[in-house]
Amino acid sequence: MKLACFVEAYNFKDKSERKALSKFKSTAESMGHTFDFIFKEDISRVAEYNALFIRATTDPSNSAYVASRLAEQSGLKVIDDPHSIRTCSNKAILHDLFLKNNIPSPKSLLFTGDFSSVSLDNIFETLGTPVVIKTPYTRFSSHVEKADGIQEFISISKKLLRKSKVLVVQEYVMSDFDWRVGILRNEIIYLCKYCIPDGGWKVKSKINGKNVWGDTIAVPRESISPELKEICINLSKCVGDGLYGLDVKETSGGYRVIEINDNPSIYEGYEDAIDRDIYEKIINALVS
Amino acid sequence: MIIVSEDEDDSDSSPLFFLGQPVRDSVLNVNHDYRYLRMGYYVSAHAETFGVEVTPDCTEIMDAYRNPLLIEKARRNGLPTNGYRLVTRPNENLTIPAMLFAVNPFTNNSMKVVKSGSRLPGIIKKMSFDARFPVSLHPVTGEVKEIIQMFGESTSDETSDFARKFYEIFNIPICKLIVQIDDGKVILNHCEPAMEKEVKWDIVHDKLHEIRQKI
Ligand SMILES: Nc1ncnc2c1ncn2[C@@H]1O[C@H](COP(=O)(O)OP(=O)(O)O)[C@@H](O)[C@H]1O
Ligand SMILES: [Mg+2]
Image (cartoon, rainbow over all chains, first blue to last red; front, side, top):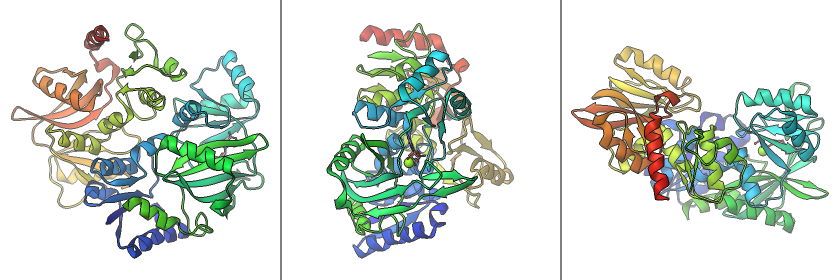
């Protein structure tokens, strides 16, 4: 089969991402398929292929969405499909999805700028202190902030409301790491711990003015607890049958799902460090 | 079915109120702006997440508002277009006059008609944010016109058939359409949010009244 992989120049900057991409290519070729990297100028030729795998950052407003939808309309198998992109790229939509499907997750509210004291009191009474504030489109922790009280909440949310009509406000859930659960076709294909760096509270934290990423520790996928597995597969089924990376915190009161991502990071030596067959599994999903 | 709209007289719920509630009925989402990350989009997304039918749904919104998707869907459904090309950099074989539309997250009202080949490179560079996003390029063969489409009605008589077909295919209650009239034939080029003041709200009101009678 003819496989296309939609990428942008930045996907080749990091050495381990570049290596992962060439591993996808060599795996596909060793299975008897062709595997071409295509770029945004090539989007309108996507119908020439049998399947499309998107590695460029996805978002409904990016080129990747156009590629995904054109491919879907032409009958290609697509990872990430348009519906998954629209759902997972937006935290306000995930807020709804979690509510509708009773997904265990941090208590969460939508905030659209009602600064009355009734509304502000309600936020802190419902969620406790501190609260986490996010724009719907944040990625790589870019627009996720923490407020320790009403004054800080007002100043952060005023700043973020300039960029988005809707914000998501959540109860703060402490943990030393996020479970990253890799799912394909509603099966677990890898498991990692994304650690929170010392002195920070997010996987990518600003510490003394510098961005620091926490370590990634791969863990055998069979070792996943039955409870975590069930929560993750229930959630992925609510979105679709594509490739997802779920972020989940483990607390004394049980698991709390932070988000489900389409287009999860796959870097050589990180997500693939233990379960090394993920390349093959993904190519298989594309050609089936 | 419930109608969600900013207009108090015509609606069962405002977008803001609607977003805070669970949804049980199917939804007609009436808005002049369905752009991603705006209220018009969130109303449809909220309805969809709760598993009810909504007009327009998010697929329809994105199909109409992203230029390559618009042209592709029009082509598949037999609505005339002049085709499109995606470019990020100027190259030799681009013909003028041409019409350019941004395919990036930031730009609205982006239409540029370019008649001089020497201006093309500068405009492509700017619109593509220096080759970061594609630009959709269409040939210009007729007279360029902007119309407002409201439930299949048009603000101009010569495009009334076209507006009706557009609505049947795209299911977008209100939008601005950029078209060309070439030898009496109407050609689709672009769809974007209408400005509130451009919409003939009395037409919208009559249409909603008709729709309510049928429920
Ligand atoms: N409610 C929360 N409580 C504590 N930490 C959170 C909460 N929500 C997000 N985080 C942390 O912030 C980081 C980014 O959050 P996330 O919601 O995944 O946004 P992004 O898509 O930008 O990565 C992650 O490391 C996550 O663990
Ligand atoms: Mg995350």
